[in-house]
Amino acid sequence: MKTSPKLLSGISLLTLLAASQPAFAHHAFSAEFDSAQPVEVKGVVTKFELVNPHSWLYVDVKAADGTVSNWGFEFGAPFSLKQKGISKKTLTAGTEITIKGYRAKNGKEFGYATLTTLADGRSVQTGGAQDAPQASPAAAAQ
Image (cartoon, rainbow, N blue to C red):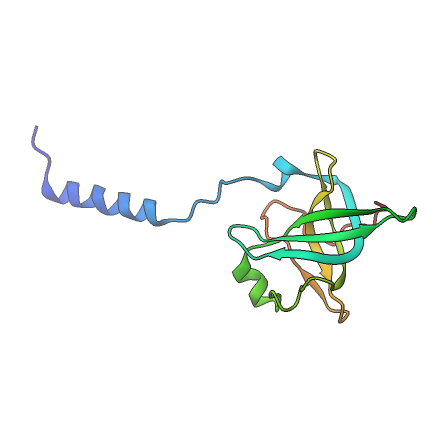
C-alpha cells in the first residue's frame, strides 16, 4: 500500500506541532502539598533560587522557644515572578518576609507559597501551580 506525500506531510506537521507544545505534567500541587494544612511563617530569607520550572525561597523561622528552622517554599516560574516585580534583588539574604501557603504532605519544613508579603509591605501572589488553592489561606500557627 502506497502512502500519499500529502498524508505524510500532514502527519509530520502534526507531530512537530505536538512536540513543540510545553509539557505541563511534571507534577501537581496535590501530589506534594496539603491544601488542608495552611501555614503562615515570618522569617528571614537565607537563599532564593530563580530556577525553572519552579523557584525556591528558603527562610529561617524562629519558633516561640527560640529555636530556628529553615523552611523551603516553592514559588512560581522565574518569568512569572519577574512580571510581579520579584527578583534576586527583592529577596536578598537577610530580608524579613511573611509567607502564606500550604505545608508539604511529608510534614517537613517545606511548603507551597501562595502569598508573600515583602519587607516594604507589598503582598505578591507567588505560587504558580494551576491546581493550587490561590486564595490567601487562613493564617495557621506553625
